[in-house]
Image (cartoon, rainbow, N blue to C red; front, side):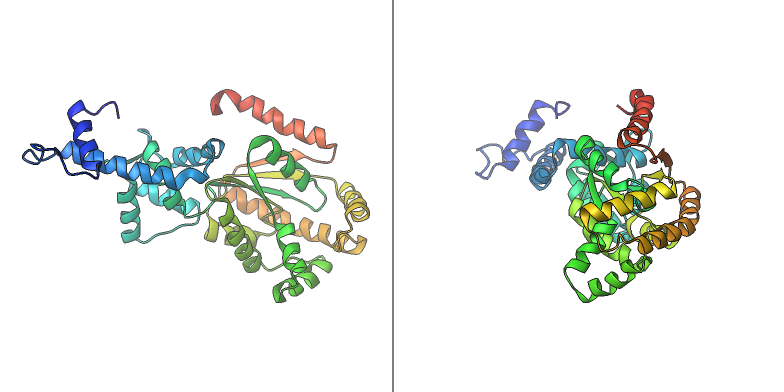
Length: 319
């Protein structure tokens, strides 16, 4: 705003005022610069009101998303905006894209800068999370433990695919009754079903960085997720000994009483994970999704220390 001349600011303020323009001002029409500035102020004020749901800490995911697709000048052109929207599962047609671009480009410069993007983020992201991190690992590998700590200490949000399915079962919906039988047998719920449920839940976390715990569970999951929700930012792969996973599941059955934590179901779930995990990881690698492997066979603190070590290594270039 400091780049605008005093006359332009004065004219813009008068344009925005609801009272009639002062005598003598009508004879000299406002300059084009003043009109553009007035439009900018109106849209920014509206955007500020729309963005009140975002806390300052939540902006980091939105800024990271912008930086991934902005050019060297740190601005989005139309192709950059199209690629950015595809990354969160939105694929507008040409007319809709042009409308979105025009709404965000408040100074009509032909590019969207960071400030403009932040103010238009509610409309552009359409309730989608800004970034998704997959947390992949076998049953009992420690996914939930890691996610809870990341939520507590790193200002991210979390959706557990297992909890999502169990909620449907507890609600005793027709879908939930179908899911209950599948889970008790230790089998995988169909990809189309789980991705549809997941996308519906993800819309509760617009603009956030979101951990998806226990997903994808198969190569089909990964393909369907990218088609509906966009490309993940990162995958955390928890590597754990199968005996340790079984031990943890049976101990959890005693403390939490989960219906699907029987020995027979646990052995079956581990076998299904063993069969599905490598094709899933291969697909993630082929799609250029970065994968970070963490040894989760040890204690919770050992797993957390391994993740912190990566953070310390990269600290100087990500701050």
